Image (tube, rainbow, N blue to C red):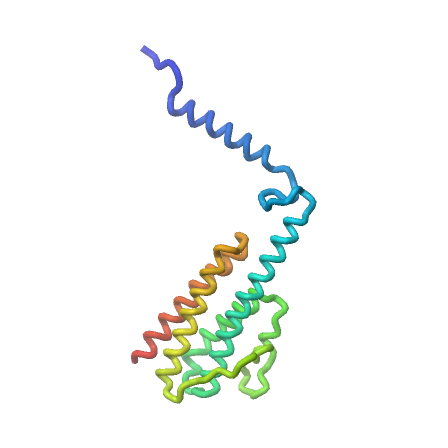
Length: 181
């Protein structure tokens, strides 16, 4: 005796077709999903929010870069350990703010890039272990801030912020384990 009525396969096929039709009908042009009426105003507002978020996230990374520079200036013996981490943070600044002058040569002549707009001098402990611990704390805070920004970010920026937050967490771990040596 054969089956009659609706089977799971038929139900799923029907649901899939209905879902596809609904998705295709929803693709109407500019302003989709952003609350606008297709005039482009919602898209402009979303772009402005993303740009502001990108600027805040770049400032977080720029501040972290300032801290690396301060620690390296005070403890040049740590440069072998810190140079790769600092280079990654400099790349984060570039990725978040493409026009950033973060790769400009430093005024100190150390060959490390200077950070434009460093607003506050960073206090660095005289003890190298304490300085590394301070950097680890700064990395942890940067990871938190970049992670928190994910909730506001459009998909492409969210992927970048997630990657940066993960890198900050790894840096924090490396600095913490290095400080215990």
